[in-house]
Amino acid sequence: MEKQKISVRVAGKNYTLVSSDPPEYIRRVASLVDRRLSEMEIASGMPPQQATVLTCFNLMDELLKARDENTALKRRLQQLQE
Image (cartoon, rainbow, N blue to C red):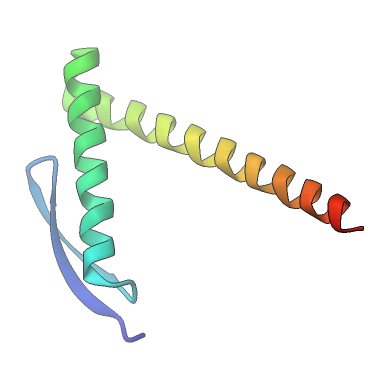
């Protein structure tokens, strides 16, 4: 798929992203990021920059745990197939 520019709004700022993913997907990602940032600011009471960094740590933690789980499930599936 050809790359295209997609405009999104996150944390009150507009961003133009270039991606080969469908615009609906990019907008969905942006919306989820915006929501997580907003939730972190409200829950923590931190200034926006600190809440952004903490949100990044939380998202990376979730990503790494999901990858680890995916790897374990693939191993288990391979064992079951053997």
